[in-house]
Image: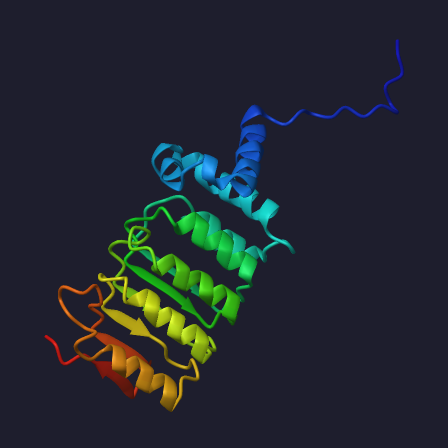
Length: 218
């Protein structure tokens, strides 16, 4: 009888694990080959979270923090109307991964990224995503409170919001937006920039609990 005490037997990965790994790799390197809408509509629900976790593991450098990965995977490739991340630091890589996994969510109405220490590059990704009205066609509320927003990033954000006709409230409490930034925001809330036939329909911007800018158009 053969002595097997010193031998190691490795169980091969199940086929579904190999499939998830291969699909995540394809998404990472060849996103154009897999339209995001196809993932939303055709992936079975039990496949979505494992795929998101594998994608994040491959995409993140360094690997995403466990809290971010857990929340991001739970909402990835699904239609959900409200998404909230609070108190989790976002690097460019986390923001890039999150926005990709949310980019097919045409049901998104509220996005709250509060106290995430979002940097300039990550904020630029948000602006680019908002710049396309097809990405989140029904989004109504954007909360970026307690993230430092510099003037160049603010200008680009406003330019993107002008192309987001569904948005009615923007919350920027604690973002260190001072006189120049407030004036810039107020300017975009006044006619003729605000009109029913030119895409910008934002109704209010909250800069603090005590300072809320409102349009004078009902």
